[in-house]
Image (cartoon, rainbow, N blue to C red; front, side, top):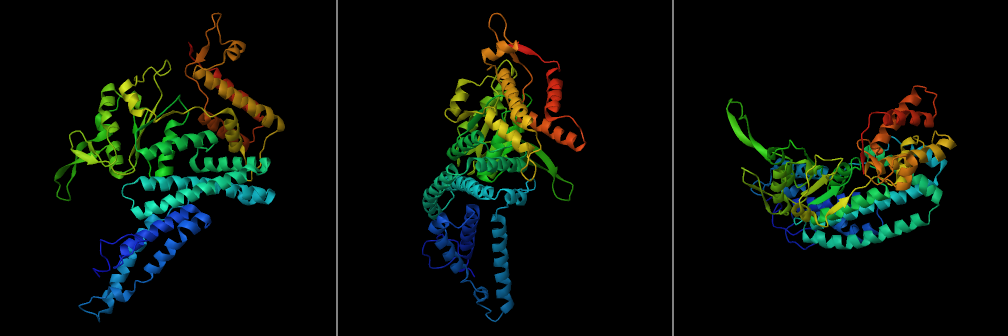
Length: 497
């Protein structure tokens, strides 16, 4: 038994004299997980996974119940059976923990109806899903290789995987370039609707994909990063989504404000009952930062520049620490940063609209250096597509007049963009002049408190859905006109640009 479960064996793929059941089980679990992520058995599978999986299965099949018998009592059949059951139960538990859950939620889309009407969409969608899965798979293998705990045999295999997967992505993109533009657009809108069904607010448009890839690549370096931009651009949502999407772990979040204390970040010493005796014991109730460091998951400091300046200085300790380094826990010793830890900071930079924000000092800004990105409002063409996807029925149809589709929606997107530009002091002077938002000296007035974002549009469209179900007779354009008037005629403050 001890020989069977030795602890100093080499991983799968290397020659070993005494097989290790635990190592083989773990290695096969990793292979199955990777193949499941891959999504098909194409070129990448044939080149990199088919042979290792066959070897792992063959080696696993060599274990027999008889091998688990007690050598001192060879006739005790039950002892061997119990030992084998225990080992297999352990293997099953480990395998079950490693199986990826199917994250696709298609409850809001009737694919059968869509494919019956337009079967070509199915082929395009398969290609799109394959590209998306390949990119995720590529990033996860890169994260796997950046982890110091990953075995060298896996890292070596991943080098070939990364090369093969890049070729697969290129081939898929070439297929989309040659696809029927009308069918491709239909597939994209359905894909956006599926994104919204899964997350509620994250839609993987081209600009969002660029933001996510930036975050993913910077996470590979393990260095702190800064996402900044105006209210409603989705900085925090992007950080949370990227954390779980790329690492498989939910990010810990520090909701920052000028009331945040050091204990809210690092934790504090507390007391709790010690067993049933009624006695009390002290323990350290760690905060989000330390929990993230222990668990090896990202931590998001949301609007971190609302913190007291003294706390910003304390956080410099985080900037100077890397994976494997000890991190000081004020008053409670140190902990070691585990692989997977990543500090992501979000901020609305201090301005006349955000006077409560603290100025980020040059020494703090230098810590981010090239690891910062401005998250902007969704471009108008993408905003139009997102709104359209929200309005799609389950079967891909659209209950909207030609006028609303070609006039009302484009005007809605235009108004949203102009409000965003006014809020961020980026209004074009010609537009401001026509709108009467410029004085005689050429100063442009801007909105101080009101901004329309995708979140605003989501609420408006949800209300539109409710009104339709209640049998309201007004048109979509009348509905929008009513809601925007109620927003615009609320007391609003404006300021000089």
